[in-house]
Length: 535
Image 1 (cartoon, rainbow, N blue to C red):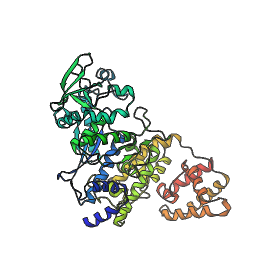
Image 2: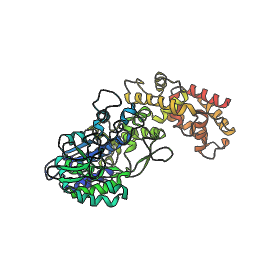
Image 3: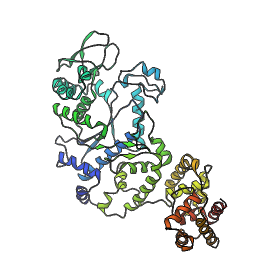
C-alpha cells in the first residue's frame, strides 16, 4: 500500500475518524500549520478524581482522529497534549478518597497545593492523580505530552495569555454575563485571584488595575482590599475562560468533548475569538449509560471502571466497543463485554484480506495505529470464540481452574498450550472471572419439555456411536438434522437450539453446538444430556 493510495482512500472514507480529520484539512488545506509547528490535539483531565473510562475514551478517540489526520496528509507532524486542570480549586471532597477531613481543611485551594490524601509520597493531591493519569495512559501505549495547568501558571508560561484576558476583561464579561443567573452574575469575574492569606481560589469581583503589569484589585476573604499581580500563579481563570485561554496559548487545533459541555464549548469559542485565537475543530460525543439507561455518574458508582472491563475482557475489546458512533450514547456494563471481545477478533481476522477502502472502515485498522502497531496482528484469529469459552467455563462451574479449561481446549485446539496461544490464555483468565461473578451465581439449567427430551434422547443415541475426535462440523450437522425432524415438533430450528442452551448450558443464548460438543467432549456432553433428562 503506497502513501498516495492511502491518502486517496482516506479522502473519501466514511469512517468517522477520517470525517473528523477532514475538518482539520479544511482548517489547513495543505495539511500543515502556517507557522510550521505540529498540528495540536488536546484532551483535558480534571485531577480531582482518578482517571476513568471516560478519560480513556477521550484520549483514544482523539488519538484515532490524530492518526487518521496523519494518514490523510501523508504524515503531517502532530502533537497530543494531555492537559491536567490541576490549578482548579477543590470544590468538594470526593467520596472515594481517604483522609477526607484533611481535604476538607483545604477546600477552595488549587488541587496542586493540597496535601495528598493517599499519603503515597506525592507532594500534592494533584501530583498523585496526575501520576495515575500518566501511568494509565502509558499502560495503553498512548503517545502524548503531559501538561500541568499549575506548572504553566506558576512558571509564567500563561502570563502573556493572562494579559490578553485582562486587556479584554470587559469583552469577556459581555459574552458571559448574559448566560448567568443574576446572583451569579453579580460576583462573576473572568479572573479568579488566589487569596494571599488563605491560598484559596476566590470567586469575587475583580478590578483590572493594569493589564500590562497584570495588576488586579479585589476584596480578600477577610474583608481587606488587596492589590496584587494576577501573573505567576497568583490567579487562575474561570472554567470557560480558562479553556479558551488554553486553546489560544497552546495553539490547540482539535479537541473533542462530551455533550454536557456543549454550552461551555460555545462560550469558550467566543472568548477564544476575543483573545485573538480560534476555536479548535472537534466532535461533541454522547455520554455513557448504565444497564438501566441512566447517565453514568462517578458519585453514584453506577458505571463500569477500566479495571472491571479488563477483569472480564481485553484492552482491545474496550477500544473496539468505544470506536463506533461516538455521537450515539453507549450502554456500559459487563453484559456488553463478551460480544465486544468476539467482534474485535472477527474484525481483526478480516482485516488482512480486505481491500483498502474496507480496511479504512474496519475499527481494528484504526485501533492498531493508535500505538504505532499499524498492521501488526492483522488476520489473526482465536481458535475458539470468547462466547464458546464462556459456555465451557459455565458448564465447568464456579470452581473451574485455568488448568481444567486448557485440558478441555485440548479437544479442540492444536498445540493446546498457553505459551502457544497467549491471547487465548488471557481470555481464559477473564472468562473464569466473568463466570465467577456473572454466570455461576444465577445459573439454572431447566428441565426439558416433552419434545425437547425426545430430541435429546436422539442426540444422545447418535453421539454414542461417534468417535471422540469427530469434527465440529459433523457434530453441528447432526444436531441440525435432529432439529429438523417433524417427529420432535419444533416450530423452528431456533426453538431446538434454545432448548439445548436452556437445558444443557443454563442460558438463553449459546454457541454453535457442534463446536461446543467438540470442545467439551462427546462423553461429557452425553453426561450433560443425562443430567437434563433426569430433571
